[in-house]
Image (cartoon, rainbow, N blue to C red; front, side, top):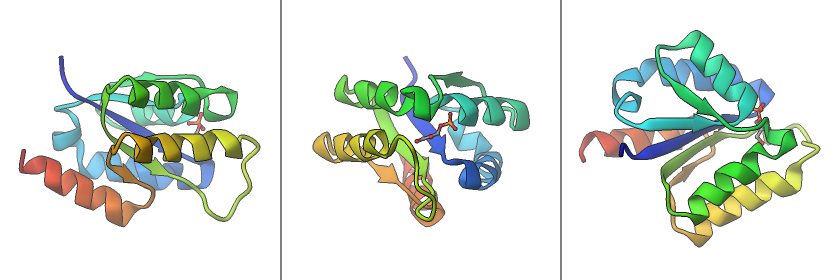
Length: 124
Ligand SMILES: O=C(CO)COP(=O)(O)O
């Protein structure tokens, strides 16, 4: 089974994530990709990647991804969150970030770190 990476972006960061995914398509293609609902739909529509969609973030998608981290299924999480906009599901967002730390899963919350994580995956 291919290793799995989660891709998530809040609304104001979705364009950044799509551009990021387009720029890194060749490395991302080597992984099974999952995303929250709207992020996944936009990635499927705007890149050549095949992304498995969870529920939308506000409807529990972050929690579904968190459960996969707990089950040791994820290699890394790229979560471009919007630090300037309050989210109705902020507790879910915090829980996802927290569970990455609990299980020591690489987590990028901005593009600079996301680039570094993918750079390091190239060397595997
Ligand atoms: O809200 C999100 C993550 O917290 C993202 O959810 P969507 O991809 O469904 O917009």
